[in-house]
Length: 434
Image (cartoon, rainbow, N blue to C red; front, side, top):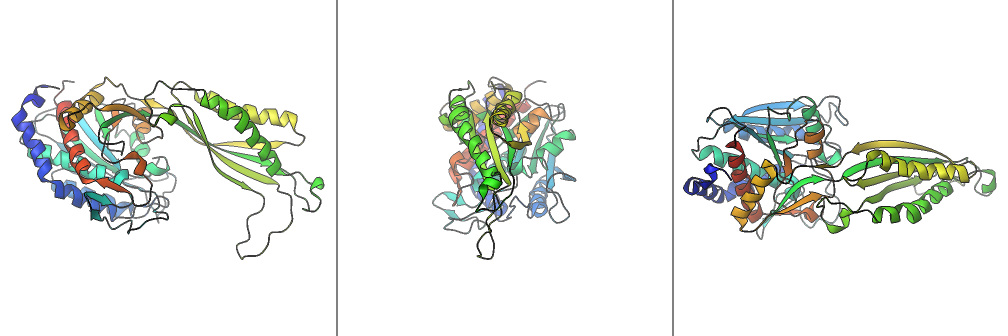
């Protein structure tokens, strides 16, 4: 840590201020939860962005709203609106620390015992869809930044806070769009902290890669009483599933990563069969289906891969299975369509943003931070690959296992602690020489 972090009375004052603003953190978390920013389709993005932006405008931030026109899902009914706010700190030129959080949430789904968009406070927790992932983290980052501004420290540089959208569906209408336009490119921004729910004592420096693809096997329709006159696409898909089960899954299980991925099971390569749809659609009126041989069967694959693997090899493993089946099975025909791909990414665990955050965790919590990587992707991928900014990590409150679950919650004490960590880390980073 630099000298500013050794001026204990001043920084202790920042920590005390954050502790005294616990109610503000809770209230802002509740306010954000009450915007049902469900993605898809992308509900109430603009009102939520404006609510956050108006708060920051009142605190002296320059606020800009950016619509990601032409991105997937962007329509006049569901426009993709993002907010970016910047505050020059008054201590002269210097670095910029950027806190980025996504405003969108997944659907509530079934199994809730409370209203998912009420923002209920109970037993030291705030409940609601997005409480953990990641509106509690956004609230903590906002209060951390405000406490630094109010501290009287003569800090150089600038703080930015952004509320972006579509992270749950790839981030293309949010961070990716902004990164393509220079919002996350040095020297405009130097360090990015994304308060994703990776647990309050963990610093997340990266994530595995992802390859989504759709395989369609093709057949020939015929009467179900005479299937020998047709060719079942479902049987062809079954043959592919057998190869995946007995050849690909064992191969993936044997691969291990040096990335500190959590949980332990995610340190290997994984493949999830996301969905299978074969034959005619089920009647929606309660009637019976007609007797036909399936002429199409589609399967969506969700492959998560390691930094030690190449994307070409990941693609090639599935292609090789398909080509082998095409050579072995009469009339086997298929289409393979890539849906999207993301390379693994990992920041330097000894770089400024990771070490500053880890040191702040030690100071606030009294224990060493665990350095981890995420099993799934988040918006660091776009900051790194598009923005060309390696100085990006995830750190925030919330228990990772609660994300997307019924009765999702975030701990109030964890939000306060994470706000203190983010404030200390930002103060350290802002005072480091360029």
